[in-house]
Structure formats: C-alpha cells, structure tokens
Length: 141
Length: 141
Length: 141
Length: 141
Image 1 (tube, rainbow over the protein chains, first blue to last red):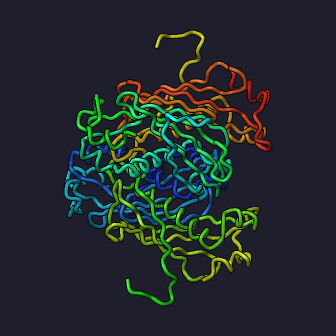
Image 2: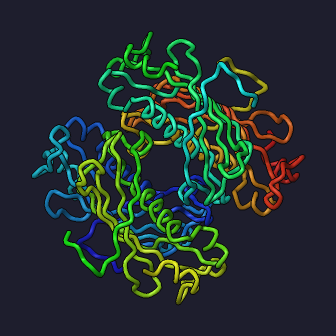
C-alpha cells in the first residue's frame, strides 16, 4: 500500500493466538477477529487519552453499525496477529475504522476490514448529531 | 448413578456442537461448557415460569460465586451435548446446580460440575438473606 | 421485502438471548451474531442432509472469506432472535448466504448481512474449482 | 497469604477489560476468566521457553481435566485484571495451576482458582505416565 500523506498512520495492537481463539480447523475462528478489532479501538482511544468512563460520563454510547471483513490468509495457534487500525478522517458523526490485520512475523495481510460506529445518547438511544466537543477534540487528528 | 427418591429429576437441555464451540484440538474448548450451563439454567427458569425480566423487576441479580468442573470425555464437532441440570434442594439462599453433561448419542458423561449462584440486591450488590417470596415459590420443588 | 419467485425461501433458526451473548450495554454484543449465523448455516446443511463429517470425508473445508453486516436494531436479554438465512443461487463455487436477523416477537429486522464461504481442499488449502458432485447436489435448489 | 519459601513466585499476566468480556450486568462475564487463565498459562510456558509447537512436535496435548473457581469481587469495563498464576510443585504427571486474579489497581482478589491439566498422547488420547524429559526440564522449578 503506497504511503498516503493525507491518512493518519496505522495504530498497532498485537495479540498472541491462544487455543480459545481457534476452531477445529486449527486456525483462528473467523468471528474472533471482531473481538480483537474492538480491543484495538479501545487501545487507540486509551492512547488518545479516552477511557470508557469518559464516554459514559458524557452520556454517549458507541454501538457498531456496520462491519465489513475480507479474509485472505489464516492465522494459527502460536502466531502473533498485528492488528493495524486507523480512524478515517471524519465523515460526519460516524467513526469509520479501517483495519489491516497481519501475521506479525511475515507482515502478510490476513484480514482487511472496516468497522463503523455511530455515537448515540445513552438515555434515548438516538444517534447524536455531533460528538461532545471535548471528545471530538481528543479523537481529531 | 443410582436413582435417589429425594432428588429432583434432571432437567435436559441439548446443544449441537458448532465450529465456534471447538478449538484447534478438534474438540469442544473447555470454557465453552460454562456458556451451555448458563443456557441450561435460563431454560430451567423459563420452564418454571421465570424470565430474566422477573428477576430484574424484583431487583435481584444472580451472580455465579463458585464453579467446579471435572472433564471426563471430550465432545467433537457434530456431536450433540445433553446438558442435564438439577437445582439442589435449598441450602440457605444460595442456588446450587448440579450438572451431568453427556454425549447425547452414547449417554457417556463428558463433564460433571456444580455451579453456585448467590442472589444479590441489584442496587447495593449485597447478598440477600432470602429470595423474594414469589421467586422462591417458583423455584421450590 | 417483496416476494421474489426466483429466490429460495428463508430458512429459520431461533436463539434465545442469554447473558453470555450480551455486553455491558445490556444488548447483544455485535460479534455474537457471527456465531449465530454459523449455527444457522450448520442447521441449514443438516436440514439438507449434510453433516460436517460429510464435508470432512470429502476432503473439503469451508472457510469464511467475506462478512458484511449492518446493525439496525439491538436485541436484549430474554429476547428471541430469529435468524433467517438463505443460500443464494449459485454464482460459481462460492457459497453466498444472505441473512435477515429479526426480533422474533416483533419481526423487526435487527441485523442484515451476507457471508461468503469458499470451499478449499483440506490438504492443500487451495480453493476448489467445483464442489464434489454429491455435495453440490444436496445444496442445489 | 503468608510468604511460603517452598512455593514458586506468582507469574503475572495483565488483561484490560473490553466490552466483549462483559455481560448485561456491566461486569466481566464469569466464563471469561477461563480464557484469561489459559492465556496466562500460555504466557508462562513462553516465558519458560516453550511454545505450543514444542508440545505438538513432542506428540503431547494438554487438556484441562479439572476447574475450580471462587468469585469474590467483580471486575468492570476499563479495569485491568492482574492474573497471577503459579504451577504447583509436581504431584505426578498432572500440571496443577493456582490462580489469584486481582483488580490491578486495588490488588483486591476477585477470583481464586485452580486448573489441572493432564498430558495425553495426541494420537491415542491416552494420559501419559510422564512428560517427555526435555519438556519436564523446562517446566521444573
């Protein structure tokens, strides 16, 4: 993938593959990646000074509204997955995350994906028109 | 196991084994049984006329406080697990569940276990001294 | 959705929502649907006379190569999910499944999705050019 | 717990608590701990120079045969769990692990447990009478 000056750099999060991540085929079960992608988002937010408590205090929840995944290669017990995540430059209030999940040893891409979250008011479950400013500032590039 | 007139009969709950239940060894991952045992408890409560909403409305939560499992045989993709569950005759406010998880085809016991729940007040998280009477009546033999 | 004579009918698979399906927000965790969609595929295959053992014996594995999900409404503890699944009329060797996951009580669509599987040779992990004929016959309309 | 010169020190493994670890009650779902305890064992083995590949090459599998857990306090989204694990001095061929899972911030014990593994021959699934010597040496104190 060619460098692109307008995109933020990848954030990296590593996971060692344990038995409970795999299935009978000896490889990572396809649904397991969803959990790692969530963990990478939480780690990204922490690296930007935001905890879950900050969102709760602001009365904001961040449900996932869209998931797209393409599986290219499998990962196996003992491998290390390198989850590379990037928050897309803002397109409205939704948070759109790009993912490139690699085998850390070979840097081969195993799974590519995109996950979209939509901030909602915790009380009314309505989609917010904008994020509270102190949260928006933290996640802006 | 010899019949015992003083014990309630086993309640039975079946699960077909899917890929996401297994691990690289091709058998059910040992932690998966915990989820099935929970499902069997919920099904038992439903069969006794109790939904989760009933417990919430009564302000009671039912956290697990103790788990004991012994694994005797494994279960494999495509097998059907027969989860046999029995609520022990009351010993105080705690709910003590016995389990005998069998391979439904052979009736061999695969996992034996005991799971104990303690009712707590949802607001204070304190253990209750007794269950609300309408709940206690439903679960008593 | 208007009736469409050229599409096969929905296959239906039901799941009662248990605590282990939910997360802190009190609703079904977004990754949980992936497991239910797998369970529905396995149930569909069983209804068409195919077990996992049949695929293994034929030397065929069926990894997921593509997942797309759109979350419209949430499901909550105690709800019943109605997973409606449909195998698309064949487009080459890939199996393309459409999903419409509803709240069984209200018939509101909660999650829509598409999951694509590609048959591979279990030994070489290469994508097959066609399915073994006895398998293809069972899954054809 | 008083210091005990004859016991090995605790091995420590940390996990940040993510949404997929929790349930509707806002706390870590009771079955989640089983996965973390497995992760801590794998990390312990890695710290002792043993990967899963080493066990596979030696033809040895390590199924769990016994689990005992006592839940004392809950952990919540955003907390860090400190999983302290210790392999008991050998009692025959079984590997007996003690666990003390704490809230990393307060050092309060949340879950105590013991998990026992029994090495089996991967081909015959029979329990081994002793571990292959090169494996035994690596895990001995």
